[in-house]
Length: 327
Image 1 (cartoon, rainbow, N blue to C red):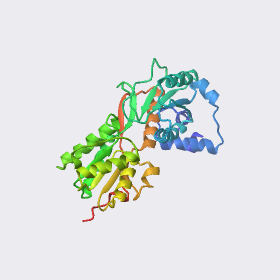
Image 2: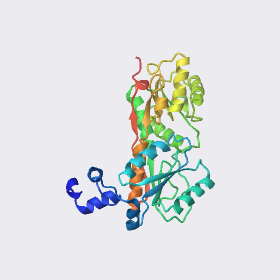
Image 3: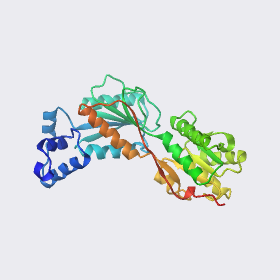
Protein backbone atom coordinates (compact mmCIF):
# COMPACT_ATOMS: atom_id res chain seq x y z
CA UNK A 1 0.00 0.00 0.00
CA UNK A 2 2.85 2.40 0.85
CA UNK A 3 4.45 1.76 -2.54
CA UNK A 4 1.16 2.28 -4.37
CA UNK A 5 0.56 5.59 -2.61
CA UNK A 6 4.20 6.66 -2.94
CA UNK A 7 4.65 7.24 0.79
CA UNK A 8 6.31 5.60 3.79
CA UNK A 9 4.72 2.94 5.98
CA UNK A 10 4.55 5.44 8.81
CA UNK A 11 2.59 7.85 6.61
CA UNK A 12 0.18 5.03 5.72
CA UNK A 13 -0.40 4.36 9.41
CA UNK A 14 -1.04 8.04 10.15
CA UNK A 15 -3.43 8.38 7.23
CA UNK A 16 -5.47 5.30 8.12
CA UNK A 17 -5.59 6.15 11.81
CA UNK A 18 -6.38 9.84 11.36
CA UNK A 19 -3.26 10.95 13.20
CA UNK A 20 -0.24 13.06 12.41
CA UNK A 21 0.23 16.22 10.39
CA UNK A 22 -0.43 15.14 6.83
CA UNK A 23 -1.36 17.18 3.79
CA UNK A 24 -4.96 16.47 2.76
CA UNK A 25 -3.74 15.31 -0.66
CA UNK A 26 -1.36 12.80 0.95
CA UNK A 27 -4.03 11.43 3.26
CA UNK A 28 -6.47 11.13 0.35
CA UNK A 29 -3.86 9.32 -1.78
CA UNK A 30 -3.33 6.74 0.96
CA UNK A 31 -7.08 6.22 1.39
CA UNK A 32 -7.50 5.76 -2.36
CA UNK A 33 -4.67 3.22 -2.40
CA UNK A 34 -6.28 1.34 0.49
CA UNK A 35 -9.61 1.29 -1.31
CA UNK A 36 -8.07 0.03 -4.56
CA UNK A 37 -6.45 -2.84 -2.62
CA UNK A 38 -9.69 -3.63 -0.83
CA UNK A 39 -8.12 -2.87 2.57
CA UNK A 40 -10.64 -2.40 5.39
CA UNK A 41 -9.03 -1.64 8.76
CA UNK A 42 -10.86 -3.13 11.72
CA UNK A 43 -12.35 -0.38 13.90
CA UNK A 44 -12.04 -2.65 16.94
CA UNK A 45 -8.38 -3.36 16.24
CA UNK A 46 -7.68 0.32 15.68
CA UNK A 47 -9.33 1.16 18.98
CA UNK A 48 -7.43 -1.50 20.91
CA UNK A 49 -4.11 -0.34 19.49
CA UNK A 50 -4.67 3.39 19.87
CA UNK A 51 -7.00 3.52 22.87
CA UNK A 52 -9.48 5.47 20.77
CA UNK A 53 -13.02 4.83 19.54
CA UNK A 54 -12.70 6.92 16.35
CA UNK A 55 -15.98 8.67 17.10
CA UNK A 56 -16.61 12.29 18.01
CA UNK A 57 -19.73 14.00 19.27
CA UNK A 58 -21.27 17.03 17.58
CA UNK A 59 -23.51 18.91 20.00
CA UNK A 60 -25.75 21.50 18.38
CA UNK A 61 -28.09 24.14 19.76
CA UNK A 62 -29.62 24.74 16.31
CA UNK A 63 -32.69 22.48 16.21
CA UNK A 64 -33.74 23.81 12.80
CA UNK A 65 -30.36 22.95 11.32
CA UNK A 66 -30.09 26.21 9.37
CA UNK A 67 -26.54 26.82 10.61
CA UNK A 68 -25.47 23.52 12.16
CA UNK A 69 -26.18 21.38 9.07
CA UNK A 70 -23.51 23.05 6.88
CA UNK A 71 -21.09 22.98 9.82
CA UNK A 72 -21.76 19.27 10.29
CA UNK A 73 -21.21 18.52 6.60
CA UNK A 74 -17.91 20.38 6.64
CA UNK A 75 -16.81 18.58 9.80
CA UNK A 76 -17.77 15.19 8.36
CA UNK A 77 -15.69 15.87 5.24
CA UNK A 78 -12.62 16.42 7.39
CA UNK A 79 -13.32 13.65 9.88
CA UNK A 80 -14.16 11.16 7.14
CA UNK A 81 -10.58 11.34 5.86
CA UNK A 82 -9.52 9.81 9.17
CA UNK A 83 -12.38 7.27 9.18
CA UNK A 84 -13.90 9.02 12.19
CA UNK A 85 -17.65 8.77 12.79
CA UNK A 86 -19.87 11.55 14.15
CA UNK A 87 -22.62 11.22 16.76
CA UNK A 88 -25.06 14.14 16.45
CA UNK A 89 -26.88 15.47 19.53
CA UNK A 90 -29.46 18.28 19.44
CA UNK A 91 -29.79 20.17 22.72
CA UNK A 92 -32.63 22.41 21.44
CA UNK A 93 -31.02 25.21 23.41
CA UNK A 94 -31.77 23.47 26.73
CA UNK A 95 -28.95 23.30 29.30
CA UNK A 96 -30.34 20.17 31.01
CA UNK A 97 -30.64 18.37 27.67
CA UNK A 98 -27.08 19.44 26.85
CA UNK A 99 -25.78 17.90 30.09
CA UNK A 100 -27.65 14.68 29.34
CA UNK A 101 -26.12 14.42 25.86
CA UNK A 102 -22.70 15.17 27.28
CA UNK A 103 -22.97 12.31 29.80
CA UNK A 104 -24.10 9.91 27.07
CA UNK A 105 -21.26 10.89 24.75
CA UNK A 106 -18.61 10.54 27.44
CA UNK A 107 -20.05 7.14 28.42
CA UNK A 108 -19.51 6.04 24.82
CA UNK A 109 -15.84 6.99 25.17
CA UNK A 110 -15.89 9.40 22.25
CA UNK A 111 -12.53 10.98 21.34
CA UNK A 112 -13.68 14.60 21.27
CA UNK A 113 -16.60 17.00 20.90
CA UNK A 114 -17.54 19.80 18.51
CA UNK A 115 -20.13 22.23 19.86
CA UNK A 116 -21.98 23.98 17.03
CA UNK A 117 -24.12 27.03 17.80
CA UNK A 118 -26.17 29.42 15.68
CA UNK A 119 -25.90 32.91 17.22
CA UNK A 120 -22.12 33.72 16.99
CA UNK A 121 -22.25 35.18 20.50
CA UNK A 122 -20.00 33.78 23.26
CA UNK A 123 -21.49 30.86 25.21
CA UNK A 124 -20.56 29.21 28.51
CA UNK A 125 -18.13 26.31 28.06
CA UNK A 126 -19.38 22.77 28.56
CA UNK A 127 -19.45 21.88 32.26
CA UNK A 128 -16.36 20.01 33.36
CA UNK A 129 -14.07 18.54 34.15
CA UNK A 130 -13.98 16.99 30.67
CA UNK A 131 -11.83 14.04 29.69
CA UNK A 132 -11.80 14.80 25.95
CA UNK A 133 -10.91 17.88 23.88
CA UNK A 134 -13.67 20.24 22.77
CA UNK A 135 -13.85 22.72 19.87
CA UNK A 136 -16.61 25.35 19.61
CA UNK A 137 -17.93 26.28 16.16
CA UNK A 138 -20.01 29.40 15.39
CA UNK A 139 -20.67 30.31 19.05
CA UNK A 140 -17.23 30.73 20.70
CA UNK A 141 -16.57 29.66 24.26
CA UNK A 142 -16.40 32.37 26.90
CA UNK A 143 -13.19 30.75 28.16
CA UNK A 144 -10.19 32.03 26.14
CA UNK A 145 -8.36 28.80 26.93
CA UNK A 146 -10.84 26.87 24.76
CA UNK A 147 -10.55 26.41 20.99
CA UNK A 148 -13.25 28.19 18.97
CA UNK A 149 -13.86 28.80 15.25
CA UNK A 150 -16.16 31.64 14.15
CA UNK A 151 -17.06 33.56 10.98
CA UNK A 152 -15.42 36.98 10.67
CA UNK A 153 -18.61 39.04 10.83
CA UNK A 154 -16.69 42.30 11.07
CA UNK A 155 -14.98 41.72 7.72
CA UNK A 156 -18.17 40.29 6.20
CA UNK A 157 -20.21 43.40 6.98
CA UNK A 158 -17.35 45.60 5.83
CA UNK A 159 -17.29 43.85 2.45
CA UNK A 160 -21.05 44.29 2.06
CA UNK A 161 -21.07 48.04 2.73
CA UNK A 162 -17.87 48.62 0.78
CA UNK A 163 -19.51 46.91 -2.21
CA UNK A 164 -22.50 49.27 -2.01
CA UNK A 165 -20.24 52.31 -1.81
CA UNK A 166 -18.14 51.11 -4.74
CA UNK A 167 -21.38 50.67 -6.71
CA UNK A 168 -22.06 54.39 -6.33
CA UNK A 169 -24.49 54.33 -3.41
CA UNK A 170 -24.26 57.22 -0.97
CA UNK A 171 -27.42 57.01 1.17
CA UNK A 172 -27.06 53.58 2.75
CA UNK A 173 -29.32 52.25 5.52
CA UNK A 174 -28.94 49.24 7.80
CA UNK A 175 -31.78 46.96 8.91
CA UNK A 176 -30.90 44.06 11.19
CA UNK A 177 -31.98 41.71 13.98
CA UNK A 178 -32.39 42.09 17.76
CA UNK A 179 -30.22 44.74 19.37
CA UNK A 180 -29.00 42.30 22.03
CA UNK A 181 -27.77 39.69 19.52
CA UNK A 182 -24.01 39.54 19.06
CA UNK A 183 -24.22 39.14 15.27
CA UNK A 184 -26.47 42.18 14.91
CA UNK A 185 -24.19 44.29 17.12
CA UNK A 186 -20.98 43.33 15.31
CA UNK A 187 -22.40 43.74 11.79
CA UNK A 188 -23.94 47.11 12.63
CA UNK A 189 -20.73 48.40 14.20
CA UNK A 190 -18.72 47.35 11.15
CA UNK A 191 -21.21 48.95 8.76
CA UNK A 192 -21.06 52.24 10.66
CA UNK A 193 -17.26 52.17 10.68
CA UNK A 194 -17.08 51.73 6.89
CA UNK A 195 -19.56 54.57 6.32
CA UNK A 196 -17.64 56.84 8.68
CA UNK A 197 -14.37 56.05 6.90
CA UNK A 198 -16.04 56.96 3.58
CA UNK A 199 -17.39 60.21 5.00
CA UNK A 200 -20.99 59.07 4.52
CA UNK A 201 -23.91 59.35 6.97
CA UNK A 202 -26.15 56.42 7.84
CA UNK A 203 -29.45 56.92 6.00
CA UNK A 204 -32.29 57.66 8.47
CA UNK A 205 -29.68 58.39 11.15
CA UNK A 206 -29.97 55.10 13.02
CA UNK A 207 -29.62 51.35 12.76
CA UNK A 208 -33.02 49.66 12.51
CA UNK A 209 -32.85 46.79 15.01
CA UNK A 210 -35.74 44.30 15.09
CA UNK A 211 -36.22 40.61 14.33
CA UNK A 212 -34.62 38.05 12.04
CA UNK A 213 -37.71 37.84 9.84
CA UNK A 214 -39.23 38.87 6.53
CA UNK A 215 -42.08 40.59 8.38
CA UNK A 216 -39.59 42.84 10.17
CA UNK A 217 -37.88 43.63 6.87
CA UNK A 218 -41.17 44.82 5.37
CA UNK A 219 -42.06 46.87 8.43
CA UNK A 220 -38.58 48.40 8.77
CA UNK A 221 -38.50 49.48 5.14
CA UNK A 222 -41.61 51.64 5.57
CA UNK A 223 -40.17 53.20 8.75
CA UNK A 224 -36.85 53.77 7.02
CA UNK A 225 -38.29 55.49 3.96
CA UNK A 226 -40.37 57.86 6.10
CA UNK A 227 -37.12 59.09 7.68
CA UNK A 228 -34.93 58.83 4.55
CA UNK A 229 -37.02 58.87 1.35
CA UNK A 230 -33.83 59.35 -0.70
CA UNK A 231 -32.26 56.11 0.59
CA UNK A 232 -30.51 54.36 -2.32
CA UNK A 233 -29.22 51.18 -0.63
CA UNK A 234 -30.06 48.89 2.28
CA UNK A 235 -27.62 46.50 3.95
CA UNK A 236 -29.59 43.86 5.87
CA UNK A 237 -28.33 41.75 8.75
CA UNK A 238 -29.86 38.56 7.30
CA UNK A 239 -31.28 37.22 4.06
CA UNK A 240 -34.72 36.86 5.65
CA UNK A 241 -34.79 40.55 6.48
CA UNK A 242 -33.55 41.42 2.99
CA UNK A 243 -36.28 39.32 1.40
CA UNK A 244 -38.89 41.32 3.34
CA UNK A 245 -37.26 44.60 2.35
CA UNK A 246 -37.29 43.53 -1.31
CA UNK A 247 -41.01 42.71 -1.14
CA UNK A 248 -41.83 46.07 0.46
CA UNK A 249 -39.77 47.97 -2.11
CA UNK A 250 -41.58 46.22 -4.94
CA UNK A 251 -44.97 47.01 -3.36
CA UNK A 252 -43.99 50.69 -3.24
CA UNK A 253 -42.85 50.73 -6.86
CA UNK A 254 -39.17 51.09 -5.96
CA UNK A 255 -36.94 49.15 -8.35
CA UNK A 256 -34.15 46.90 -7.08
CA UNK A 257 -31.35 47.66 -7.78
CA UNK A 258 -32.01 50.68 -10.04
CA UNK A 259 -33.60 52.78 -7.28
CA UNK A 260 -32.46 50.95 -4.15
CA UNK A 261 -29.62 48.39 -3.99
CA UNK A 262 -29.95 45.55 -1.53
CA UNK A 263 -27.45 43.28 0.25
CA UNK A 264 -28.26 40.53 2.74
CA UNK A 265 -26.27 38.24 5.02
CA UNK A 266 -25.99 34.41 5.33
CA UNK A 267 -26.28 33.33 1.66
CA UNK A 268 -29.21 31.12 2.61
CA UNK A 269 -30.06 29.78 -0.85
CA UNK A 270 -33.76 29.34 -0.04
CA UNK A 271 -34.00 33.08 0.54
CA UNK A 272 -31.23 34.54 -1.60
CA UNK A 273 -32.00 32.83 -4.91
CA UNK A 274 -35.79 33.10 -4.55
CA UNK A 275 -35.63 36.82 -3.82
CA UNK A 276 -36.72 39.09 -6.67
CA UNK A 277 -34.19 39.98 -7.94
CA UNK A 278 -31.69 37.36 -6.63
CA UNK A 279 -29.93 38.68 -3.57
CA UNK A 280 -26.34 39.80 -3.16
CA UNK A 281 -25.32 38.48 0.24
CA UNK A 282 -22.47 37.53 2.56
CA UNK A 283 -21.65 33.81 2.81
CA UNK A 284 -20.19 32.79 6.18
CA UNK A 285 -18.57 29.69 4.66
CA UNK A 286 -20.08 27.42 7.29
CA UNK A 287 -18.82 24.27 5.60
CA UNK A 288 -15.25 25.52 5.85
CA UNK A 289 -15.93 26.56 9.44
CA UNK A 290 -16.97 22.99 10.26
CA UNK A 291 -13.94 21.58 8.45
CA UNK A 292 -11.51 23.80 10.36
CA UNK A 293 -13.22 22.99 13.67
CA UNK A 294 -12.83 19.28 12.91
CA UNK A 295 -9.15 19.71 12.01
CA UNK A 296 -8.51 21.60 15.27
CA UNK A 297 -10.27 18.81 17.14
CA UNK A 298 -8.20 16.10 15.42
CA UNK A 299 -5.02 17.98 16.26
CA UNK A 300 -6.11 18.15 19.90
CA UNK A 301 -6.94 14.44 19.92
CA UNK A 302 -3.47 13.81 18.48
CA UNK A 303 -1.86 15.66 21.37
CA UNK A 304 -1.50 19.11 19.79
CA UNK A 305 -4.28 21.21 21.35
CA UNK A 306 -4.70 24.90 20.50
CA UNK A 307 -6.51 27.70 22.27
CA UNK A 308 -8.29 30.90 21.38
CA UNK A 309 -10.77 32.09 18.78
CA UNK A 310 -9.98 31.69 15.09
CA UNK A 311 -12.08 33.91 12.79
CA UNK A 312 -12.53 32.62 9.23
CA UNK A 313 -13.11 34.89 6.21
CA UNK A 314 -16.62 35.42 4.87
CA UNK A 315 -17.33 35.75 1.14
CA UNK A 316 -19.45 38.33 -0.68
CA UNK A 317 -21.69 36.64 -3.26
CA UNK A 318 -22.74 39.25 -5.83
CA UNK A 319 -26.10 38.82 -7.56
CA UNK A 320 -28.55 41.16 -9.29
CA UNK A 321 -29.88 43.03 -6.24
CA UNK A 322 -26.86 45.32 -5.87
CA UNK A 323 -26.18 46.62 -9.38
CA UNK A 324 -25.21 50.24 -10.02
CA UNK A 325 -27.70 53.04 -9.55
CA UNK A 326 -29.90 54.14 -12.47
CA UNK A 327 -28.30 57.51 -13.04
